Image (tube, helix red, strand yellow):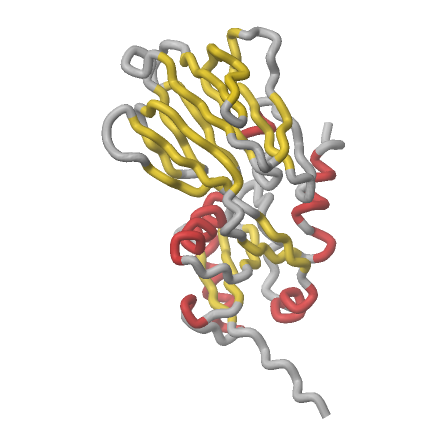
Length: 261
């Protein structure tokens, strides 16, 4: 007779908000949790910002434990509904969604090159009142010698409904193997509205007149100011696993966003 599969070891983490801390106390009263470094699965209580923060910590430590988030923030696009009851059953039935981050290599105007992951997007943003001037190259070929704009971003499918959507970029299905290249308030070329690219593409931004028109690079929540250039591509060596209730999975939510009016 086959032995029953042992129950997974679960860790619980929560954001610093009162709502999340109250929810944490309720769950700890109902379940036994282990330390995060001993866990097979992590429960995250908070909003999308807190989830991104936790996912970045996992990328940094190299341990890809699945994460089941419950929304105690505002939008909660990366999260499930908050409920105390049925937690173990929900985890057992959850759908696994794999997310692959961007690898962002930033060359500052001064200092050493910085390499950062980006799960949602990499954004370039002007630092002053003066418009940014940015050269855009795709796979080593200059496609736009000069993009005059407030900024430009590269979004993954998982991030295409975040800042990218606010900048009028396209929504990408989660399994599409595509990237969205989206300008932010473009001035010239006035008619250019961005591009949809295969995720094997290498994208390079070069800041023109970086001394006069400084630009910062933001990889999700991490910023490097006054940059000279950025190279972006998918990081094939890293991945993250998010757990979702079957009726609330991320791929379905991204698809449904295309019909929101």
